[in-house]
Amino acid sequence: MTSATVLSPTRTPRASAPGLSATTARLRQRAYLRGLLVLDTAVLVLAVLVGYVARFGGDEPIGSDIPYFLVAPGLVLAWLVSLKALRCYDDRVIGYGADEYRRVSSGSLRLAGAIAIAGYIADVGVSRGFLGISFLVGTIGLVVARFAARKMLHKARYRGYGWSRRVLVVGDTAHVLELVHTLHREPYAGYQVVGACIPDALLAPVPQRLGDVPVVGSFRGIPDAALAAGADTVAVTASGELTATRLRRLGWQLEGTGIDLVVAPALTDVAGPRIHTRPVAGLPLIHVEAPEFRGLRKIIKGFFDRAIALFLLTLALPALALIALLVKLDSRGPVIFRQTRVGQGGVEFGVYKFRTMVVNADALLAELAVRNETDGLLFKMRDDPRVTRVGRFLRKWSLDELPQLANVLFGHMSLVGPRPPLPSEVARYDGDVARRLLVKPGMTGLWQVSGRSDLSWEDGIRLDLYYVENWSLASDLTILWKTFGAVVNSRGAY
Image (cartoon, rainbow, N blue to C red; front, side):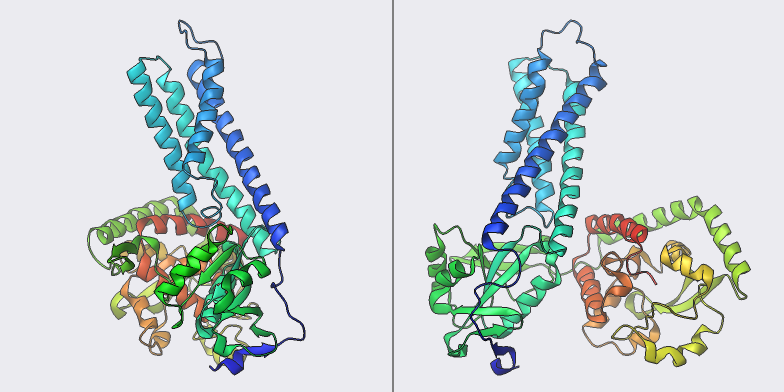
């Protein structure tokens, strides 16, 4: 793609993209941080109160000379200081990623350890039960409260009035467009692109735009362009003209302006645990570990999958029997629908589901092909006439997929993984998409918690490949937790 095809003239210069102004963004940022402080304080006061009541039953401690009416507020204050010391109110870690939760937990645990050591050295007889219950309730409460606050922030960002960082993107045209697309794809992350700077050779005498992003300058005046656009972050992506020396000087120029410098590497869709930065000869080299497809963690994952599948199957037997009866009474045909899918390593297996369509659904597919509502290799249709009455209910709440617990128990599938593809889809896979077959397919996955049928083929593949490359037991637990919310809200289910 040439620059002429992506750069288009505008009638009047614009210094910022649509969205919150710089002043409004700063005000809402401060309001959100103050709200977090109030929320944390309320959680800690409640935790200390629960610890006191659970330990002493609301009465004055008998035989103790410890003034708990002073210890309790002192503990809350020390806790807040510990959170502040670990930068739990730093706007660079709030609202996205797991670092916010790690810092909150670490601040609580470090304070608990410090109090335990100080109490032992000073021989102060503060009740260990009171402290233990307070720290347990407080740590869990802080994480849950931060999670709830983040969800509210994400919803506000989706609607266009949540606090976000204002970003000036710097780099070659193609890389700028790619980074802008990535940031626009996940608005909840809180990065609002307000302008772009491109090499001098691409600038024209009239104002230009890259898609919906205004070009506000060249590499010669990046700090001035950032100030003019009201940016608080400069994101530098790949460019042949931005040498190491020039990038270092840009960092010097931004000192004291309150504008952060972010370097976006060309490497994308790689999770943090696989990335390690090591300084070599003054260069911050990024080392990327290879994906893990075997070993002890995979054995543990397999054991976990089968144990949970067996437990859920046993627990759901009455529900399975009731659903089977409803399917049988609703329309003629078998209760269980078995379909050939492709699993790990390209091995085919039969996936089990409750039948949600009429018995001749495959024969009717050719007639409905022109009404396909998705791209890529999948067929999706919101009002598919082949779906039965009971089938619509089962699909809405994902109850039709419960028999797949048997597939997990037999080792064909995992609880979490890429969507199990059809052999006809696999036959048309290219080299990249075929990497989905390196792991077992899953009952749920990133595709389900991110929109399911509402996702495009490209986005679904991107999420599946991201999981294949970066899976972990912790991410599996997170996806399982999010699956519950996706099912309850019926997002993308049809």
